[in-house]
Image: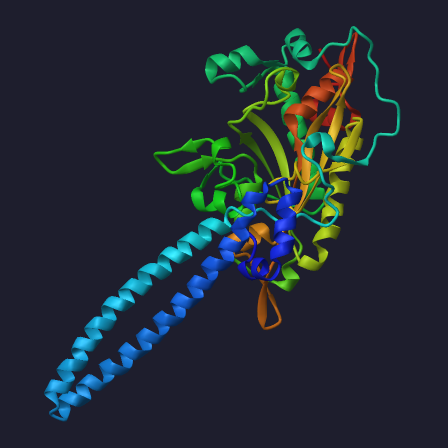
Length: 425
């Protein structure tokens, strides 16, 4: 959530950011509404403070009037206090309603995009930040897509997932399950070697946690909600891991705080129909290792580059062709100031698959979380960042397709000590 004073002092910049995200003109009025509600809040607070001070002054004088024998005057003052009490109650009610209105409006304003975010309407307009310069693998017309490979070698079973749960919940079996576990261990080991503390968080969070990192109210319809207990299944480890520091005041020398965690991720929206959702291209449940950083505002963009280098190193070790995209305004998430997507090339499908997003949220999440650090005698909001390192479903799809051979699926060298086998067949 943007800071209220920032919106007041940068109204044009906030509206320009919304335009870059392709908000319609009639939606930009929310900025003016926020300022109006804040003006009303201040005015109401001033009137309320004045009435409370007047009531207190009169209340103190009543006793003195009674002591002085001025009973009639004292009773008149008591009546005056009663009138003020009713007015105070009205103003308190108006103030509370104004604050609620203001909070509701603030939650609807997205983050201001970083100055480097390019214009654009959708993922088709994203900027290629780093292209794959070598030749892309060509496996010929007989190359199998990963869903056919999975059936051939009994790696995962989509139909069994439908039986147990529903569409979009694959069941990994045998060496397929072993490959999943190997990737998770490899990603976690790489993260801990890079200085990230491993966290094993809960897979459900309360409403306060989901709201703090921006999933609510923006992505309410995409989260699985356990209504009876008012809990949400996490869409990513980012949510519980970042919330560890909700309502915390850090010291400046605490930075950087680096955390990593593996969790299953649950998302109700499975995307469009067709090739995009074949096999495990897009599912409702998938495993992911997340990296999170809490950073000093002056160093957060250096941290973003560091996190990007970490993800890039993983893809290089897995020997997968990849490219990096800078997301345009129309594809940027609600909470992010700047996001880079990593895509790997799927040789059998002959298309790029997104496997990681690395983002800097600046103070947007920390303002919601009240995550601050001491800067001299005052406090400031920290910056938060996160990235997928990596999302397994599409990594598995690319590994299966790109490494297929007559003997089976050739396991990348870096994973063989984790899988215990060189060929999956």
